[in-house]
Length: 221
Ligand code: ATP
Picture 1: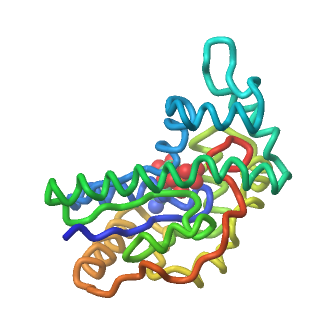
Picture 2: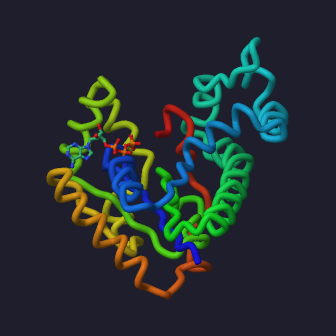
């Protein structure tokens, strides 16, 4: 049976780096934010709902999603955040369930669900365990500035929309500390991989809170 592990953490914590290492170990990774962006752009029903709720301006003349327009709509507006989440999250979860079924058919031992938001959307109930990646704020800022060429203040502003590192650590089944080198990271990923493969306990149906934020729009990430 395919095991499922959520990988989450704040901006620049190293989620993608961790997922690449899981892939090296043979795991398959479902990138939830990529899936969310794809379905907002392509899924006809999601598009129709977005237009019904946020207006035809949500897509430009060529039919492309106007991410800046939607981001402005949801920024600081909890009702609109809840509305976009209600359109996107159930479809991402449905896509994950399809990915899980496919992974079972393919005999994949571990399917990783990578997402900036897992607990915020109650996603942990669908997973066997959740790993939180963390590193000191200054390290995360330095890495994102180097990766994206943005200003440190922009990174800090995006951090403000996410659960605090303490809260994430409290809810995690595993904490992966990404303060050190990529070799350190690899060792920890290997430990988590083996721990997940050895455990039979399922986390699914655990407690959760309702959607609170939307991680798949630019200003929210
Ligand atoms: P985001 O929240 O923006 O999606 P993320 O959590 O996926 O980010 P990564 O993209 O994996 O974070 O890492 C941020 C940057 O830091 C990347 O350029 C990555 O290559 C680099 N990085 C990650 N871990 C380390 C490490 N241990 N040592 C050096 N660089 C690292």
